[in-house]
Amino acid sequence: MLEAEGISVSFGGVHAIQDLSFKVEKGEIFSIMGPNGAGKTTVFNLISRFYDVDEGRIAFEGEDITKVSPHAIARKGIARTFQNVELFEHETVLKNLLIAQHIHKKTSVLTEFLFTPKVRKQEIAFRRKAEDVIDLLHLQNYRETTVDSLPFGIRKIVEIGRALCMDPKLLLLDEPSSGLNPEESEDLSFWIEDINEDLGITIVMVEHDMNLIGQVSNRVLAMADGKELTTGNPEEVRVHPDVVDAYLGT
Amino acid sequence: MRFVLKTNYGRDIDIFKHRAHAAWYIVLIGLLIIAPLFLDVFYETQLTELFIWAIAGAGLMLLVGYTGLVSLGHVAFMALGAYIHAILYSRGWPLVLSIPASAIMTGGIGVLIGVASLRMTGIYLAIATLAFAMIVEKVLAHWPALTGGHSGFRVDDPTLFGLSLDSSTAYYYTCLTVLLFVFLAVINLLRSPTGRSFIAVRDSEISAQALGVNLLRTKTLAFALSAALTGLAGALYAHRIGFLFPDAFTIMTSIMLLMLVVVGGLGSLHGVVFGAFFITIVPQIIAIVRDWLPTELVQRGGLEPLTFGAVLILFLVFEPLGFYGRWVKVRLFFSQFPLYRKKTFLRQKSYLKTERVH
Image 1 (cartoon, rainbow over the protein chains, first blue to last red):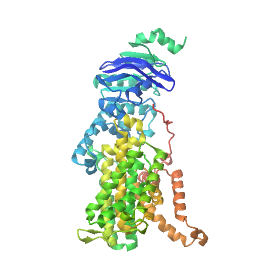
Image 2 (spheres, each protein chain N blue to C red):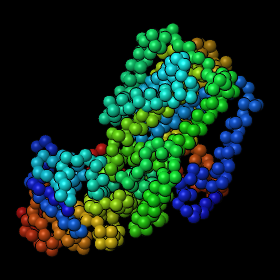
Image 3 (cartoon, chains in turn cyan, green):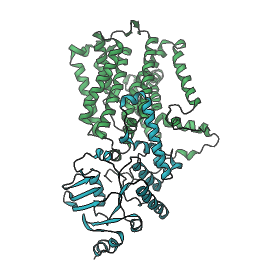
Image 4 (tube, chains in turn cyan, orange):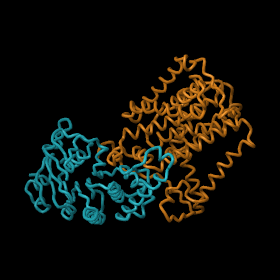
């Protein structure tokens, strides 16, 4: 589904990613792990097209996306969350979920000025979708709360909800469990499984928490200093000598 | 306290949240309609001016309050709207065509300026738009064949389908009608996907992009709509002052408009009305207070900019959400009386937000 072939990127003299290749199959949960500065988030930023790759190519569903503009990525069916949460802070949770359906809009500015019945119908359809996501993630209590008054844990969940509102085929989760307490982390692992199984969304996640990775992911890519260490199932990767080295040092 | 029972999603989409809400606005509009019957000409023209400022303010609010872009050049759009309308009108275009035409053309110029300058943000955008305003001012002054240059341009009296709108009452109703339509259109836009994409760009460009919002397109659209509405206000203003000359549109007007949106309350249409009220009433108050001040102070001039500046600073420090923010608090106080908690609006510490890409 998602395929990276020999991608490299450097910022000035820093080689953030060097000759990295991986392949994500449709329907799986694929994790990327590695110590700080390994280049995990950079991989996401390359897929989202916030950065340009220097070499190599990234393909999504067989289509080369290395030259697509960043806002067109969403339309291909790729949604993402951010490590430090990038919600629309001055708006309510509901509004955030509605904004996320931008790519599905079929009305023009002119009809919106007049608020024609078509616009109203579309608004109601958007609202239904938002309510489905609210039900799935138990956000009923926060519907009308503005994001800047929500605790961090809830914000992370809202951000996942916002990504789901796009109806994506592929979901990129950047450290979904960071900043969550153990209980919230556990809820999260169930949700990730639900999203994957019930909604049929392929998931790629960057994660530190080995427990979470072990619980949900099918395969893990371990990286350090911008290079691949190994790829395999969570148990193998956890005990792989290079991975142990990278985390504990030699 | 009022709890509205919502039984369908339409209730959240409707403009008015409940009957009493709608009733208040009907009362307000009704009062505005009958106002000319008992107001004298002075107050009537002041209200007309307020309507014109509110239209321009709605334009700037879309840009500053909803899209998060700043412009110090909006006076240029107002001037362009005024001149384009006056010129077309003097060449025999009917009012119903020349006013929309001036708004559309001003919007078109807004697109050009937007495409050229919207890769910039913050202070750089402010400077670019300021430069644009200066260029427009110079062009208006140095193109006498078209604009009359410094000797000015007389605006013909407004007539609509053979009906003269020249009396202050007729013009009052004209501006009120346009204002109501503008507000309805803007409210509609803001409860539609396009309006929400403006807000997305304001709050987080990076996630707006990740959600599929085309940044440049959205910003340019906001800029164009903003310019068009300000141009529309300019066209109405042309008849209000009756005689156009470049010095009627100085940078001071841009700053007044910016004042209007900030003091009114960023990100709210109520704020536009409060702000317009504020900038029409302050010069009148100054005119009254002037009589009591020592003559040396009065003759020195600059009293008006000084007052505006001081008020702006006070608002930024004590009530960043402007009059609208204050209004929300007062309303909550009464709706929860006597259970109002003082800390409700205590500003919360927010998480550190950095500029880097996450």
